[in-house]
Length: 158
Image (cartoon, rainbow, N blue to C red):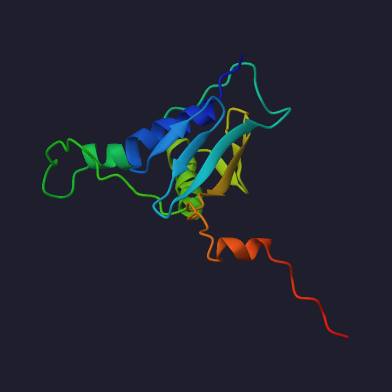
């Protein structure tokens, strides 16, 4: 079985930089947004572009974790920060922009219309499907008197 390396990357980068609650399944990541909506993120290899041994390129060192922990801000090296300020994604559009940025900067992959192309050959299709959590509806209370439900409608006069 070939492992989905792009989905593993999404999970790892969410662990590192995203404050939203998310759950993982075997084939997708489900992320919760503050407005009670959700999105399902899945990555599918495009047929004909998947090598036998998928290998991700080495991670670039200029992304946020490495930037905060190893950057000289002009006053000498900053003391180690124990925890990053994580991002809260507000909706599926924020999620799309974030994943595009992460793929382009961390993986040095080309992101074009949700198709991610690596220099080493594999091509993935990233899908982000928005879901809406509907609020629970209150139970309808009957307002008519009980006897009214058994009465016959009045006859029309001619």
